[in-house]
Length: 459
Image (spheres, rainbow, N blue to C red):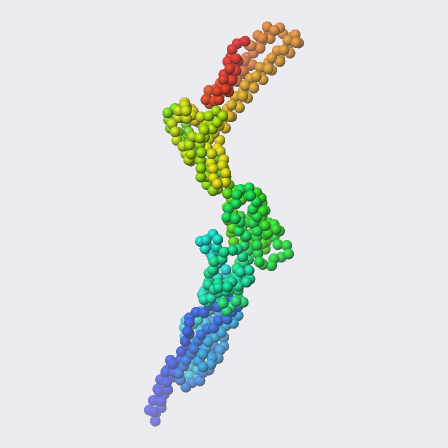
């Protein structure tokens, strides 16, 4: 009798172990992604063997420990979550109990739920006339999309990315969830011409399809920085009249209070004729007759300078001496003179100042320096003449007053150390400047020399 009881006890334990190992939970997917505001279904089935009845089941989320009581039917434990929010993100598992199971029956790792929203993202389409826009999400939520332009659906646009040829307000949605549309790309600049010419009038317009306040204030940016000379305006237009090369750059706009929703960048390309046209000479010193010199012309222009022309002054005419950015030649009496270059692009042309190439040893003197020397000599001559006229007036006054005789006045004036030294120093300075920067224009040189000779000859 005792032996039979022991046998029954052993059999009962073995049966309980078999029942415990006979339960299972199965998920047909390990991850689900849903749109914020939409619903998702977590697919699940369960199974157990044994004679004990089902007690209860539940879903729980691992991170938060949130429990969702659930009573499945016909071994279907699928869970539907409506009105998704960010709080619904996490890893979910189903578990159940029976009267004959001593612990929860479940299956890991469970189902990962991701909640996402939609955004319109701009990409480079590789085409100046088109822009590539993508309906961006943090996960793949569907195969078909719906695109909207200015609030109206675009026909036959169902891919995740599309190319758009014009500026407007674009948004997107997943097909079947059209009510859960992405935020629109609110602001766009109306695109200026491909290129404008300096001096023209240019107007940039900040356009939006949103309903703004009664009196909105628009903010303009150039190269990411507020436009300092007109950074706010109650008009949605930025007037550049006239436009200059300094206005070239990348422009965008926004509305005060919504600066984070700025428009896309639009490049303003300003064309202008050559500026800062200059001539450089090599070598810069020690130029002698028979040696080779190279003249190089530089300029700043948009579009770049395409033609350089070289001129040499010969009397009242300018002779063409070559083309190209640089010219080289041997210094002779025929090639020495005053040179300048002309730079030209599609917009216009501009000439440089002149540079003098001498035929004998000396420096190449730019025209501006040569003019300065001539002016300095003229001022020195005027000073000498003024001193002379002053002395003559003083002499005449003395005679009228009868203070000294004519002979005494002449002797005193001629032997006055201060006056004599001052005039002599002035004449020496004039001669020194003349000797250092020769050759100058022949007429000016002859005039200076004759004046010096007259002043050095005793009366």
